[in-house]
Amino acid sequence: MTRRYTPGAFGASHRRPPAATVSVAPVPCQDTMRTVTVDCAHGTTTLTIAEHPSGVQIAGQAAAVIAVQRHFAEEGCACTAELRRRYGVAP
Image (cartoon, one colour):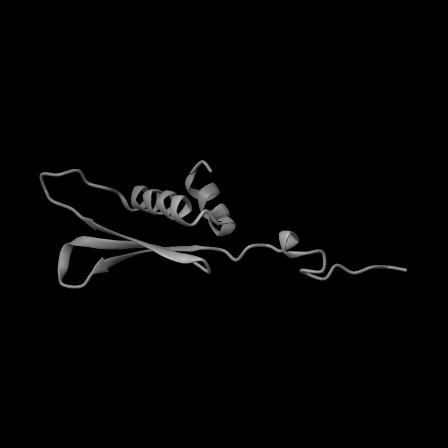
């Protein structure tokens, strides 16, 4: 008899966690500001980055890394596993 795998049949620990998403968007009416949002089923982490010409400039990928690190620290969920691998964020 052949058994077929049914997602969730062996308990919640065998289910694949839903994937988190990251987005970078400009703040309306603010040329020097943008928001970086990491969203998953467990919560949302939003960073607002304001840049000044004489200050430190944060590239889009660096901002995403910071947001993924913060989200993982706050939520502690496995949803960010793919993002952590993509951006090189240690668990």
